[in-house]
Image 1 (cartoon, rainbow, N blue to C red):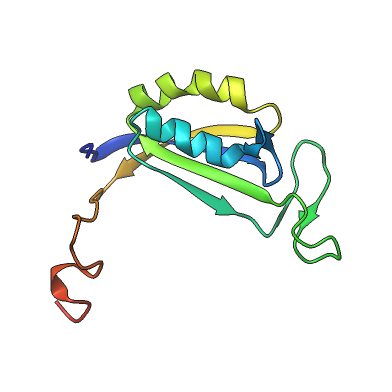
Image 2: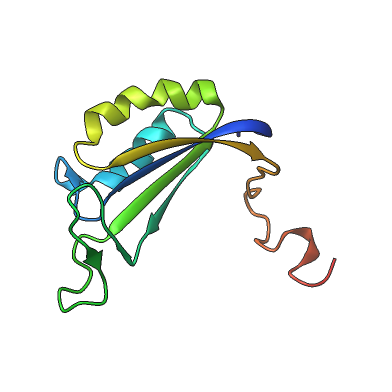
Length: 126
């Protein structure tokens, strides 16, 4: 596991849920490529409403339930590693928004295999 604390860069890619890359969800391809590139981690967040450059509002509240809702893929790692990953996004993201933000990683700890998800505290008080 990569050690990551201190100054970092947050990459956020905003795309549509229905966007695809070779017949699979684009957000999934971005996550898999980030994993293959050895980045610290990636998460996908599904929005309930939004609009982008097309000015078309996408919402889960209309009759067209869940039609192309906004999705954000967030990746945090060192600036060097994030910037090295950007060319892959140039290939993948045809419509959407890509942003970079400085951030500080305070804690980055993975689960030890076989360990209770609640940790050594057993889910109770410390």
